[in-house]
Image 1 (cartoon, rainbow, N blue to C red):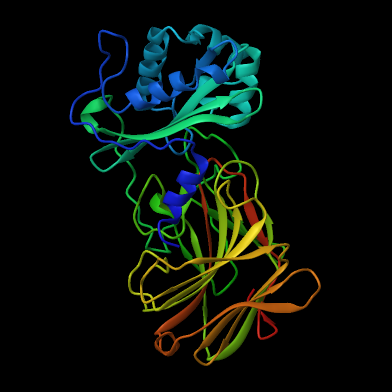
Image 2 (image 1 turned 45 degrees about the vertical axis):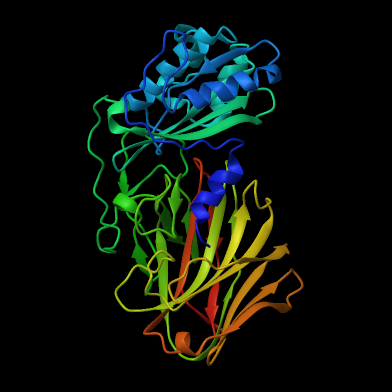
Length: 412
């Protein structure tokens, strides 16, 4: 699972450009951008022949939660000016964009989803729309820019560039501190099923009795609901349950944990995964063995065994597939093993020091798809069943767990 977040980014983009700047970004006399953003404009010029009329619209970039920021508006303004100065594009004026949004009952801060981008772009007669995010990172910003064909929804160009803090001097409020290692302090944004909520709303997370919540970064990035005997896990944009610290534009995501005991058992799950829209969605169901008192993620080096089943909807890995990954001794570089699609049931099995994954492909018969023997893992201090996930873009994906059984008895 090494660099799972990075691979999702790479599979979603056509072009990757990552470089750091030591000086402020400015327009040169020729009208091009100096510094990292120059590569974004250069890519678009290179692909100009894929736009019949060359008419484009540039949206204000947002943060990872879909909110507009001063930095996002500044990036959009610089790109708008630079693209116009190339003489290769007909850039639609901001006033026309605002008029189109008003007609569609959208606010300027409400156009972050791909559907809204395409709707307004078509109304304006544009060939393409430029959109993206600006994420605050240590010492600077990560800008993720995409050019989308508004007719087909295809991503024409994409780039990630990093900027120093001095490159985007616009003032912004400090980020919320994340107390994600404390299950007692969980406040999550109620934006999981919505594309934008300007002010995050704290809600109560619900889980079955005996389950533990490890909140996402800042109390956000994932939400769970336990209702009518079902456990629901709702994905959020840019969350990754495999992280303990922000990395590559992702933030630690919600983890749900159930402690288990014994050396001989089976755990059966019958999940229903609703993958939604967007890029790079992964749900994970894992067996985590390791020390007491630590967040059960693959980025914590103290674990003994991390055995994971992944449900994937990612351009680089297919949209209907499942895979198994196994990591040992704190090394998160375990290789993924494709187990195909059509999985309706997942079973984890332990027999002493032998750990197995079995899959039901719809016929009620479980077939072993992976196994490993680890004497060291068999002596681990704790063993936990883990539910989590990762999402690259704003996501409406969720998982429904109607039944989780251990040795024939419900874990709910």
